Length: 358
Image 1 (cartoon, helix red, strand yellow):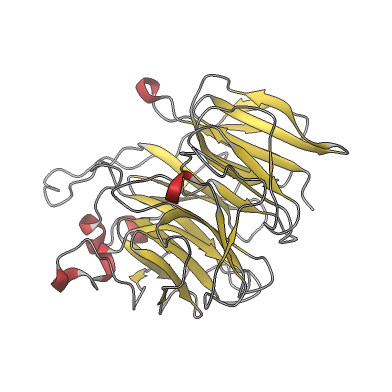
Image 2: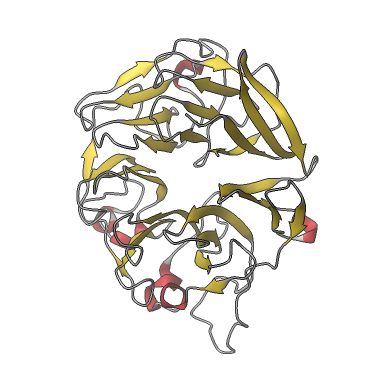
């Protein structure tokens, strides 16, 4: 099991260690600064402060614990005359990091929706031009009240590092089989309820809140704006799972590392009221591929709770037994038994954006 957790919050990066008597805060980095993404890879930790007025930043901690500021991913200058492109060609935010399937390689998904690659653990970055220059990319649209679109998830096929799948909020699911030279939108079968009827099945209008891949299979789960979907062919075709309880709406999803039929979700009431159903924080789990869902509540707030969990706020470790999730109200809960029971961290943290096991 992983004994270290990183918690990205609006007021700093919190590092937690699993001790004999439970989880404790072992360190706080960038106190006071919003952290939009974090990843521990090859003994190094990358953190992405999102400083608002001063813009996004990128720092890396080496194996000795020393932090150093890294060069930021950058876009080329926007060509004059690109009036068809409504999005800026400047970095708004690093939204997530993903290991790249080769030593030293990782990807960064950003706002506006772009994918950057580093082959030296974040020292230098290159824009994936195959995706950025795709003519349909300009059709992507913003999330969270009309802001820029963003790549919420990147998945690298563990059997083929040239095969990459990304989820875009809002822009659908895209795939490449040649390491990013060419891309195509996939996600057949998804339906977006809030679009006009004749556009609900349009691949590019699908709002992908978050994707989660079971690495032992071709199964990908999707917490979509209009519910929960599951694909058995690496995102090409999707089936809506309509048995989710107490709601299919939410943002976060975690896939079991070896069992393609097991996944976890943290449901909210609905689009128009983004709070836990009945003001009770629960986790929803399926163990049969989405045919049925269990509502897990042991150890979680059962009343007067208004915690919302963001896209990157739920994580599972490599065993599938240890999970953690954090909320916009600063609550953090950890399970050691695959979600059957939960224990709250003895702290009130700032609003949580992302949770990652080392």
